[in-house]
Image (cartoon, rainbow, N blue to C red; front, top):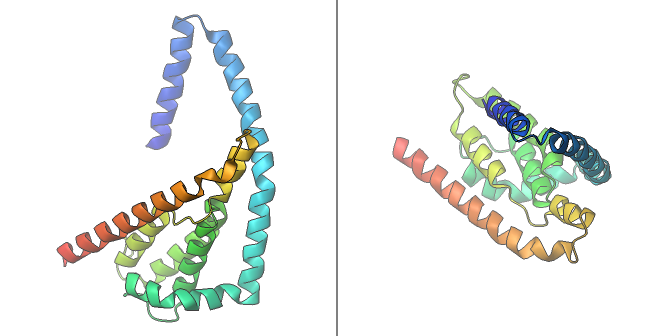
Length: 192
């Protein structure tokens, strides 16, 4: 559905450029934005590769399991339907840890694996379980302590102080996480 909306907006923009006789401007913007996207990708890729590599080392060394164990008290309260010691809790903790470092794209593999494990626990396979919904809410709110991706983008585009957004990002992610989890809890409680 979203791809249809984006496609319609792009076609509408191209159609408008024909009507307003600005097709040359549209062509230039298409080429320039493609170049900027490639440049941004090439500048961001090393950071993402570094963090994904570090997370893989942490996963293989057992560090993530130890951190997940430290998170188990909080996670067992947020996800009461997941049995203690289940692999899904470790994957959820790993996802949260990587998100805290501000690397949402590096957190995606952990999130996908966590959803697979939560689906295995799900009795009703065609409907999301409470744990899946809570994890989605927590993941969507983007628990971020240090927004490294945003800092690197700000640095890439010449910001005088790229890290000045840390406090603002921390406050906004806290508000989003608390509001999302509170709403999730209230809806779950209302539905029971």
